[in-house]
Length: 302
Length: 254
Ligand SMILES: [Zn+2]
Image (cartoon, rainbow over all chains, first blue to last red):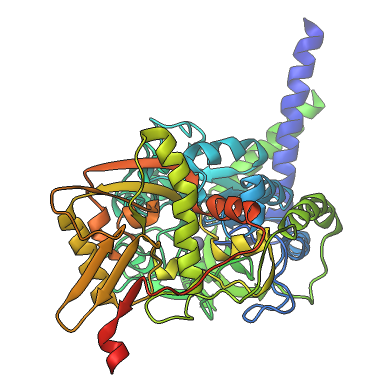
């Protein structure tokens, strides 16, 4: 009994030591904290680089190269998150032959932290997506797809909070309206909820209740539309407390991340990196405990 | 005991640290192009290898032969590839449909935009079929009223594009209007027609709205690509011709 007591105590002490040790170190050595967010979207099963003879993207892309890049960045800054904004599936025979198994396995090896669900991720039906989940060692986030009457129930979370170097990063997912885009027999009983209302809810929960230092929306809504259809830019302008929207679906190649204003005139970043794993997006966030520095406001360099 | 004291001190230090909230002061955004200047990670490469080898072997397998180039734009309102696609889909799908219902499909119709790549003369491989039909669309049969068939005809005439049609469907646009024959017979307003298409088009793709609310719908659970591959595998040499199944006599006279 005594021995058991001792073990419990020392485990607790070690936990405090590790936790405190880390915090103390960063607290003492510098007041700055650095979080790196890496992201992809619409990779569409492009595992190999494009052939050298390809007319548009000769010898570009490739998961094995992306792995090298991600590894180097993680070495430089361990406080890194790697995210994907959906449409992981469909586009090369790898998907037709293996149903997404290799895509998920490789993303797990690259240590993706989370992904949201794109319309093409339903291409083998919701059951096809479910069947590949054992190969994914990362979380699927979607706050506006209600999966409670489907096989994905409890396998997809609305959001996840990551803590890196003491910084709380809240990430939530948003998906595009499936009706008219995906055959209902593929998505079955999935219920699509209004992404704007959900985003307003999520950002409030993450910022105000969960006290996140950083709120990221992982979206497959699309960058911008000519009509009223909800897009990332539209979402940015009608919400608050979101720092970054990582988008997909429209395969938009942005020369640099878009800086736009939210509903209370604060800056929001919206980014998307085209498609097919041709690019890796990177956003670095720097935090400071120095009140004087902080009061000067944040600078955005894009 | 010593340990306990240390941890207590650290714990309180942690709290005092926490009271000073970190403020976001700087954001930097950039993008890296993934190209040949970045070396491939060997572990990833080795994981992909067995998958790639199997895919490549399968994709390069020769399944048929064509003595001519097959394109979607080598005719006016029809094409070699469009005719082939519609005819082979009809042939493969009708086997399934007939065995299930005892009835025959009247004709097949798809969309020009759905033909994603041509096939060069020579050997046809699995890859040719994947390039031709990269999507996961499935074959469906819709039972349409004669009114919907007329909508379909009007759509074809106004679009004026070589949408793939099977050989049972003959439409000639004339000075006076149009002449339609389905299985060599004029349109019968007292009967319904079984039309083969894809689930994509049936659900309103390419504005083919006449497919949207059919009298009946039969899902064949047969992917368009699989029908193509099955046909190629069963056919040693592809024979296809332009037979004027959809033509405009007004343009011919001009
Ligand atoms: Zn996409």
